[in-house]
Image (cartoon, rainbow, N blue to C red; front, side, top):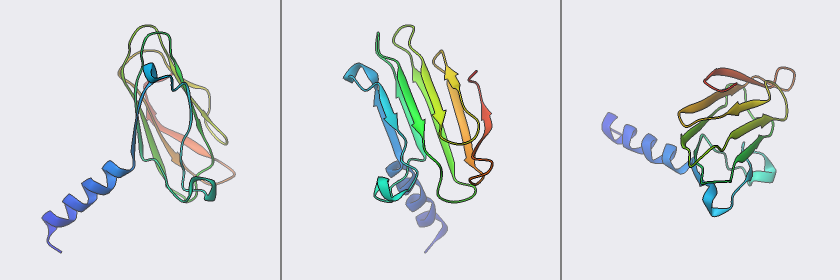
Length: 123
């Protein structure tokens, strides 16, 4: 496989692991897919959020399935005064994004440490 084909394949695989939400469609809670059996072994790598007026979003992040697993949550467009809350089952918790441009980048460090915030603009 040539280098170019590898990058194209990687881009397609990444796009398949990106979840896009628009809360004006009534989506107000979501449990991230981390590759567990309950997720049919599927996982989200990126969650992109657009809020509509009056609908905020709460994202619950269950435990990861392998060390170094990452999840990126982006608050891209805000319709009004909505928020995006990220709550992990284990690890760093209570992350709230209050404006578009907010993000949370987490990494799974095992059952003892849980999800660790790598970077973010959330509070």
